Length: 351
Image (cartoon, rainbow, N blue to C red; front, side, top):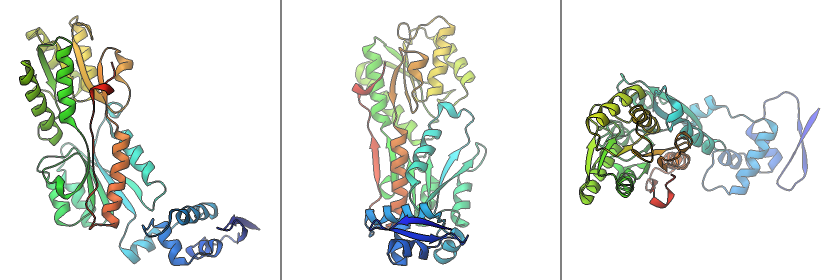
């Protein structure tokens, strides 16, 4: 028995179907390329032409070639793994995690790298999974999210020259790869939009204040409200990451105690839905007697209540960028780190 694969010239080449495992040499014989070229093409080396990479990958796929990762690791010390470190979340449908994972995995699909997810729990030191990966050589690079301004994980990775990228900025952003959403712009747009809807008193459900993006959006919203002569209350006993029933209770009490509050800024889909539920419990109507401004990664909120004011965060773009940024940090550590920022505009808002 034999199988056929087409080399670069388009000619069929018989491949012995003896049950032997295909190797780099097999691909070399079919393609007419040197074994070293085949190896570098499969490793996505920057000096190999794209059409050569496409040819080699196609042949590898057709003959069922699977690299011996244990052997590669022994020879090079590389794992061909990129790890995304994520906090555990039970309410995954209203978070950006599924979209982020799918985008990163899709970007890595036709590269030598595979994605693993490393979780950590709320009662766990966030440094633990980072130390475990680095000290045990479990991955070639990592992606972090929920960054802190002075994030010890970032300093640890920089000090050890370990490739990484962050979903969010830090105080050391000039030294590392990142992709971020401009939460400063998002918050300012929200204050202006609520003011235009007639709100004079605004409440805000921000992320936990130790996180960098929370501090950015609180500061921006505060400055914009002061500029427009509006009152702004930032919730202190609930965050956009709190459980929905807790948010509902806090919002209900706030609206009953301060009926002049006419709008809410919500930093998560879950928070926005909880605000709507609490408001409607006491007779408020979204888009009429209460305005709700939020952002989301997955289109849900306007299906839930069509009069909510919603900004879309393109988490797929973030995942694709972060995957490429980590690969560059692994292959070309001396290059300037890749850095990207998604900036929302008022024209993009859905209502």
